Length: 457
Image (cartoon, rainbow, N blue to C red; front, side, top):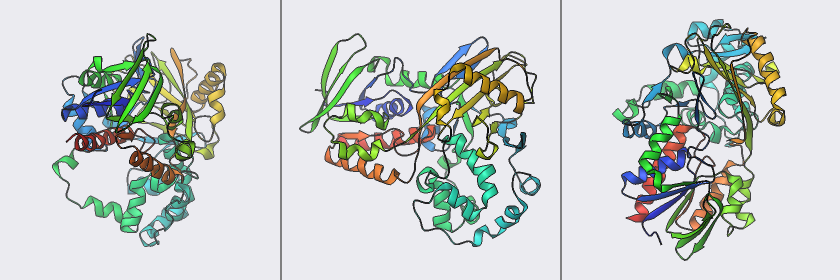
């Protein structure tokens, strides 16, 4: 029995960060994962002068816990924030990239929004707040800002973050900070102004909301976390995992990558896996208890890394470009990693990440490689004004890429709470709750570490 050791299921960002924070509390951890390497979907690949990600490309410094993590790991990984020149965002309209407004003048002159909605936004502070906690993002935006803001700002934004459909996502769960602005201040505009006047603490000042990666790729963050957790404490390639309650403990069994069996008792077990895997690893939980979790939908996403040793297309002077659903294209957007971070492509070259599929086009996930390549090349020729064939082209598919926080989220959170109360010491974590971004994952890990510290005290 490991009476002072926590078992963490999943060696992704949540699990590794949790191990790091628990170590700071003096608590031992063991991490197991079915994949053949730690990191989860985060993986940096170096090939032919390019540094590209096969999973998330960037994050946002939106929590102090994430900032603190990089400070803790600074001897082994260096935080890299986006270049100033990459702050611009493009939106496709009528086969032309238009920059999202960054100020009053550009907001008035942009062709993205209708004249009616531009002037109508002046009345936003005076509109009554909604009272439907399950209101969709689409309904909320149309109600407060107008349809053109939904079509050419929020819809592509949701595609970029969730690969989702704003008509389905619930604002209170998918965009809780936006929801809170209306509920607490009665208006997006009034809330933003009021919050800007609140004096920030030194810790809050570090939460810059900047886009970030790690120098040399996000894989270096994972390597630093592995060093922190201790490589000998991490077992990858495991199979046949089963967790069973036994008194106040949990009997956990699994097969190692070499086929040998393992069975041990742990006082605390934390799962960070997808909802779809829980029935197999928690066989004691009845189907009724798990059903709200199994209703969680995931966007199926295809990412294509396209590298050019010498770029001859449009100038890459932005973070990237998003494609509204109104434009009826086969992609969600294009990220410009070589414009955002240094050394991601050869000098005079370029690295693009093209995202496809999502909740609106799940069929793309099942297309052949040739079909996907054809879509990418045709789209880049039309939108990026290049007929070049990439020198590097890699396709990555994710069946369970991004969980969708729709109106069923409340039932899922209640189910998680019931299970954890019924089986003290079992904690269900990961992106099934508390947000989907990297900052959300690290923040959750820090909070769970504090929770476990109390259990052991």
